[in-house]
Length: 98
Image 1 (cartoon, rainbow, N blue to C red):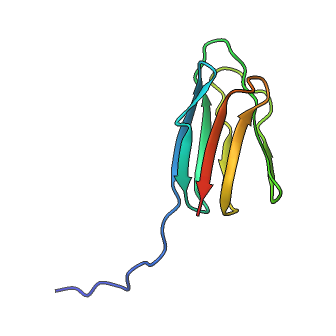
Image 2 (tube, rainbow, N blue to C red):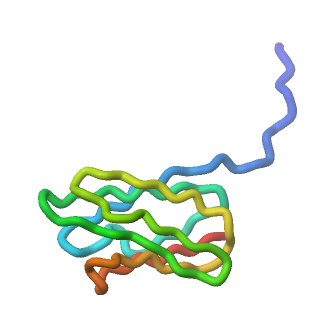
């Protein structure tokens, strides 16, 4: 019988897909770990989105996202943050990073 090496104690990072379609984020609330990555997919046929975060500890700005574009954000800071759309102000995604 072969001996197994030591168990890995760390959690691997996850990639989460967030759809931007119809002036909404789907999902609208995410619980994540530091190091996880969010991919923001513009699933609209003809709408442009502009995802951004303005927080005390960091900022994120995906710029204008044409249909089909998929910018990513790797979360390195713990806390609660809101991703908004600069073009559609009612679009909001709350992320909770542990």
